[in-house]
Image (tube, rainbow, N blue to C red):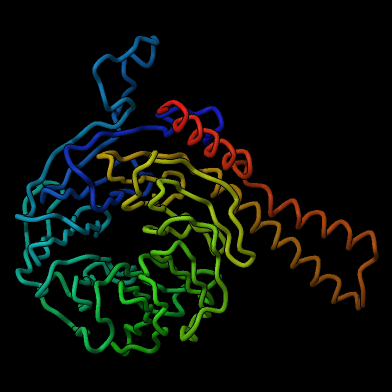
Length: 403
């Protein structure tokens, strides 16, 4: 757990300084010990957790002149593209790195040799903005570009399986692509665009099955929650628009807790999402009920460009325009989610037992106990009000120090 109330500028587990501004970030392995960072210069930096503790950390000596305090070290730098690398993704259990660039191409890189083994030149007519690999088939990826075109690729054959042109779906840049499988029941893409709409694509039929009205605000991020029943999108204006999945014409709910744009979003569980905003804060949000539980951390005054969550849900990486990547311990979210799931199972079991016994109503004592337990579950995350107040105090302190 991160206690931001007593944190200073290096409040994250590790703060890493990059050579240039990052545009995307992705963990290579399940436990988050290695990650890749896409840079505006066209290069990709690979960072890895040191295998052994530094001597300075063990005996308490201060590391002088080292901006990268912590346990991560740069493993290598890959020159991938002539223009900025805007999107990256690992495939085949981390053995393959995929990159999408402003030069309109997709590169397939062998992680062991760090050499290109495939290239889709002119994959789009405009710069590539987003890319994701499919959870059901790591040989298939989806890319989106600045003019709103979406394409499905088989990277083994370097072949485009399907192209959705700008006049078919979007009229502005593709801002996020989220693959929704919903425990195998669905095989769909949820895609947001700068034109203010979110669309759902059925990958089995390769067709658009729904698209929202124009929200009159750029949609920048999205994910599918509540066991596939809700689509949540982040906007330029700071709103979280919540749609009923399959009925995305208009939002069914809206959360207005962000003062600035929601540029990045990560699903932690069916109820919890992490948001990265242009005000530099990483927030913990619950959906239905909609509330902010607290803050993971911040990047000062700089906006958060992208985030990545390890598969074991213990480690979060955030990339910002301050040339840094920060690594956060978010294991408390996973532990909290497991507790909530066990609590829900226990409640369901009790309800089933009550039905079997033909018990028409709970006693007043049982109702009070359930209500109390439900209230406790909503407030278990230990970073709530205290972290929010701590962040406000820190911003106020910076303001007065500058006078």
